[in-house]
Length: 613
Image 1 (tube, rainbow, N blue to C red):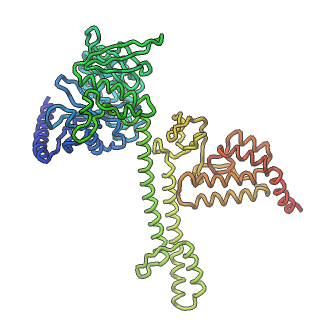
Image 2: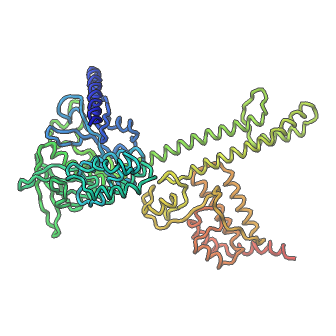
Image 3: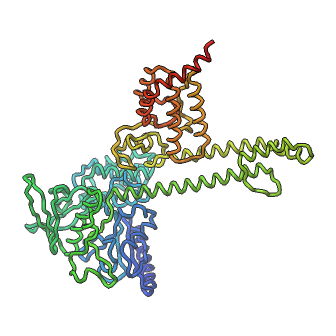
């Protein structure tokens, strides 16, 4: 109780400071907004008087570090009757909220996408806060068992209070039990304690993600927002709008009937009445009318159904939805005094487009960071070699290439007749060992940077080891087994092929055949591997180019072994050389073997005759 009173006093003091800041900003033509997060943290944002709501959202997302995934979130404001209305991000802020500033807004997740589609950790944290708020209010209790509720309570308690403590933890479970329900049963406390003990050692982020995963997979009402309605008989009900369906619910949030989006033919609005035209089993259309408490609430429900359907169920947004203006105003007032449209729907991208754009931005950011690191490493290596070459001569720092180093060494041996040249030879000899050690260190750093370049773009943690067929994109083994479609091009994955890189030290490859006929193939493979190992880290195309060379060497040297062994190795998918992507060249090598069988056998017969006594 004392902590609650202290928190209320702190919030009042903060509000006074915010009001004082608003008085100062109102004189400069700005609007002050107090944005409340699900964990009751209030953010203070000042925008221009003619700003759109999107500017407020962008400032909040920038403060929270979720700018790349801002399209999952939205802002709400409360009407006088307590209904929460979604603001349209594309319209002006001052024209949507009744009253005068400062405006009190609520920052919430608008589109609850699956947690595995989230890229940023900050976004996952915001999703967790919104999920906890919905669970604590009991809004997602429909068709959930006590066992599931106990698991969710254990996860929320672990995140907030830590590991299980038999003396203090059980009494904290009631903090996450909804006030809409009766007193928390002893059975729930016992099951929650059992689940809580099993979470010992789990990280907080892992526990947050586990709660999101559990709610997404096992809670039917995940991502559903509810609106108070009256049916045609005057009964007070709730209408829930979620990612998969529109539901008719009782006032205790239990489902009466669910309408999937494929059953909705059209949705219309007239005043405070929203009409659902539903497809029946006999292909007929049944019309259902539902009345809401106000025109704004009806508009919000109508928009929510359309926007969630477009966001989750469509590949792209049609122009008639994207560019539709507000139907509640007259034609003569479609444009305000600044020639700005008042759009009806607040949806510009689908869930797939938002996810792809976020991953693309993260990929480019990682490439820029690795590129800057590579440039700094190259500069450092050049400086090291240049300084070691000149041996501390009068502060000269001009970079020298390896070729110029060898040329300098030859010139010192030729002109070593004077005491000055003898000193130069001694100086060069004394620094030869240090230069070799520096070169080894730089090569080791480049190899380490090269391994970082080939991290999996799904988990950004493990190295790539799996190639998707037929698109050829890469991922790690764990993510590759979990995906059914490529995360880059969205093509269906027909086959997963393990790949290898020349710098994989822990990979053991089969030894080459010692037969004399394979000497040319072995030298070619060794040369290709040397080029691949000595090259600076590049993109996957460079690796594929070296693999083409390995494949050609396989064609040349493969005739030294029997055709039965080649076919057996090809069918089993084993790699004959330490290059990757052997699967993609399998058919090409088979055709080349058949095309060049006669020429290859004649070319290999000459070395065999010279070797024979």
